[in-house]
Image (cartoon, rainbow, N blue to C red; front, side, top):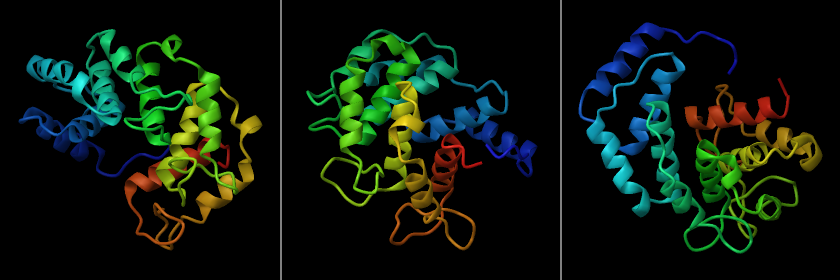
Length: 221
């Protein structure tokens, strides 16, 4: 993202490839390993038996896991069946958002990422989805998990940004760019990393990635 070359890149690739050659369990771990190898233009090893396990799990998984599995299958060249679209859409609520019991911004983000992988035209009622996303914005204009929750976290801000991008709604027209940027910059710790919450927290790579993605999307750098 910063146009820099990682240190010890070849050792990193070798370490990930060794992990990928072993027993594959834990959907999040598989997701990260496959995406790392794909980003380095390497062919991830993903045996057919694991593909079949993923295909069997879609109907019983939450939206985050549905997205992670769909992403992995897309990278390894597996054609995504139509029932994944049906599975994601089954979580959509009357307000245009997505969730198991009620809409929340993270579930909405994962659902849209999944639908976008398969066929963006399958996304229902994008205007209502944007209305729900806007309802999650606090008085400062920052995205929280739900219309009634507070405070915002870096992942909910990232999700809001991605929802606008997936639905092709220009960020410059729908967001107060300066307020979002200023809020995210306040999450930076003295070690250069970013924390999850405005109030307290340690720097973690996941939070750094989301913060930098937001800042880059809003053309801060």
